[in-house]
Image (tube, rainbow, N blue to C red):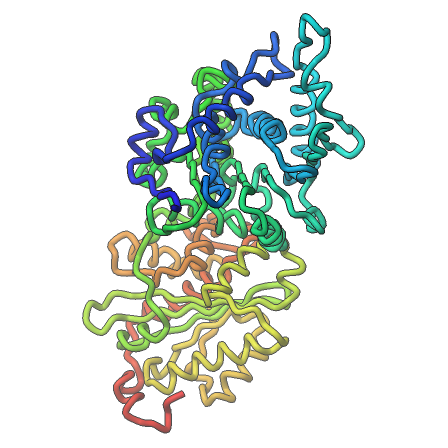
Length: 571
């Protein structure tokens, strides 16, 4: 029977100093045997080389119990087939993983089994292997025989970074992440360290899928992902795996084999405007190895240094030491509107925007082939008069090739339908024109100045729009930089009083988080040059549309009702 991995009381468990996992009906004999083996291992790089029994917190022993005590007596299957552990830095994550790897070798009975520990970089892999080799070297000699049990049993191959069990032929190899790391492998155990570093890796999800595909052929396999939070908004494979782990913990997925052990504050603390996580009295909730590898005093010293260097450094510290998830508005020059940008609002589709608006304005922003083309729409609700912001972006292949740091994030948004990955050089122009034509034929644009464009590089787009019977009076050149300040500051106020609502798109929220500002006298500018490599084009499109909607326009036609009553115009 599958285990129920939901843990609705995880917050209470963290406050009580307990692991944030449910009570599972484990095989107690097998679980305790694994813990006994684990406890006997020694820390190689600490004075006195203490045993894991005293050097490691009970939190990781709970993980060891689940990893080795879940075998179904009838099928031989591990009912805990995967563990996703999110734990802050300096909680002996890599050392404990190394000890679990040796424990797995000692518990293993499968001849010639293959096991892997995968680090995101060579440095992380080297650290893990040196810990394992050191634990074997630190195993004391038997006073009667003068021989070390672990040194006799294991062959430590420094050159290939492998530990070979002379009794069973099993091999535990430590590798740095590479798409070839899984070639031909059917591993019994895989430990992936620091998955968050792989968030921007374009092929990380495929490698993880290959690992799972190989392990599915064996019933007693285990995949352990143990990682710190990312120091930027989660993306790619890390974002996907963390999201699923949270949903399992919260009971949204049943019948699987994933156990989620997430040391993180609840959202109310993470997102609190006064940054409640700064209170050291809360820190023990997410520091399971407190009093061993880390103390509050040492952590406070690090925090004061980071705080003194500014908000950017402070937030990086918080991601690494408290698992605070970076969302929007995390840098010193953040656009002030990010702090009041609506969160967790219902998703509003383009069709709903058309149906519910009495007037729509559009803003378009984009650059060359290695940039995004962003379309922003602002619709004014027929009844409430609230403004709703909707956006879409188009990416040419050059963007994914040249901007590897955001490629996986753009692919995530593409799956949601908010980023279109173009097949040809003019697809973005055609599709932007099609959407604008749809709004135009619906009579929802004002007679004049309904589409705002960045004056730079718009010739080809204007040609597409004119071809769709949108004439010059409808198009408006919107000056950028400080001249866009009225729209930026006006949107800030409407966000504050709730008269502007986003359409709930993660892509647009991401752009808001990327936006940085510069002061230009009494004006403020949100500029690409200061926002770095992260993208803000759809947000600039929204600003352009806000600039036009601020004129309180009246739609040219009768709105969507007239549009739908004329079948000739239906697209």
